Image (cartoon, rainbow over all chains, first blue to last red; front, top):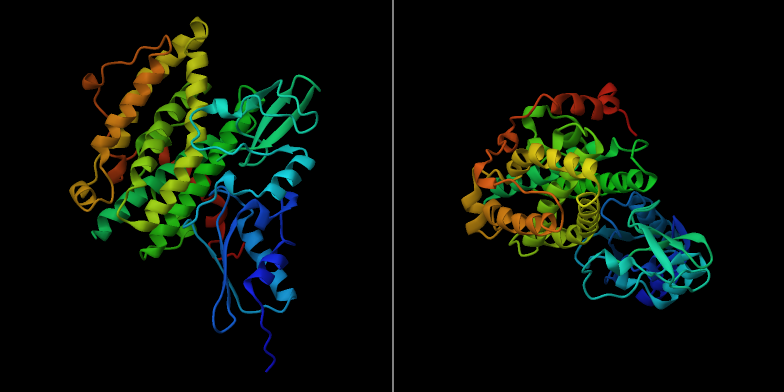
Amino acid sequence: MITSTFTSQQILDWLQEVKDPEIPVISLIDLGVITNVKIDSNQKVKVEMTPTFVGCPAMDYMVNEVKSTLKKYGAHNVEVNVTFKNHWSSNNISEAGRKALKQFGLAPPPQYDTIVDIDILEQTPCPFCESTNTELKTPFGPTLCRAMHYCNNCKQAFEQFKPV
Amino acid sequence: MNKEALKDLLYKMADDQLILGHRNSEWIGLGPLLEEDIAFASMAQDKVGQSLALYQLLQELGENEPDIIAFSRNANQFHNSQFVELPIGEYDFSLMRHFLFDTADYFRFEMLINSSYEPLRLLARKLKGETRYHIMHADSWIKNLGNGNDESISRLQKSLEYALPYALGIFEESKMEESLISEHIFTGEIKLRERWMEHIDEILSKTQLILPDLAKESPHFGGRHGIHTEHLQPLLDEMGEVINSDPTADW
């Protein structure tokens, strides 16, 4: 029997390959939806994930991507649990993730303590020209995690990954 | 823990989300402006997703799988409030329902963050964050149109008066309400109604709309115990049309 051993750091590195299916520039690790990786004494890999939004239709797809990517590297015994134990917040997006979002043309969410009112979405810096002369058009967008804005400076509509 | 009381609570929450989610989705393509079309579609998606998460909690407690629960029951087996099953009507009614229902929804999740039932506590924390956007959206439109012109104000006032007895039906107590409260599963409908009332009053006081005296209203109860209007069964028939054409098909 061939046994291979790997560390949870390796698992995390491999999972950098798995991107958000709707925003293919950001990995699930940088997005913060993979909340825990553990390897037990039998080399069974246990991955915990949590959805950005409960109604996210991409969850099953992402779970399968995690499994097939790890399989490619030889980790066959993988269990993925979707849990709300460490629930997702946009504060969980890494610095690298925020940069990737911006380059993709999606304004990254501001870090926040508590969302008091919809004002938190106003004057979002435009990802194209950096201007804050922008206005919120609607807190809802093409996917559950995005809001839509308009930049009065460069006259472009843009989307924001919204703070949750 | 009183499992039956807990299941009753989960059913009414899940059924409210499922039914209102489907009603909201009827605005797709019909919204008075593109942004509202998208808003109602997004809120519909949130609600249907939230109902799935709640049905999954029920499955963990031994109930059937979510698709079966959602699409194979008759109207008298649904625990949603009558409010959510009413047709979408015109935009003023849908907006008013969105405001009155989602405010209750938001504070229900907020109260459940302290539930003694851990899976519900964890889920509620998540759902509260999502529903925050729903009430911010509702509040801003109620304030805009409630201070708009004669037509917007009178339409909203009429919708408020029509919707209110149904909205009060949201807070119909469970037969096992005492267990829910004493076992700290949920703080109870009466406390929720008080918290709801404060917020509704606060927002409406910033508009030209007048909140009728709630003490004089008689709530439309019954939904929590399977008594529904004539509008629910046709909606369920439509929702289940595809799955019921071949219940054994693998999608």
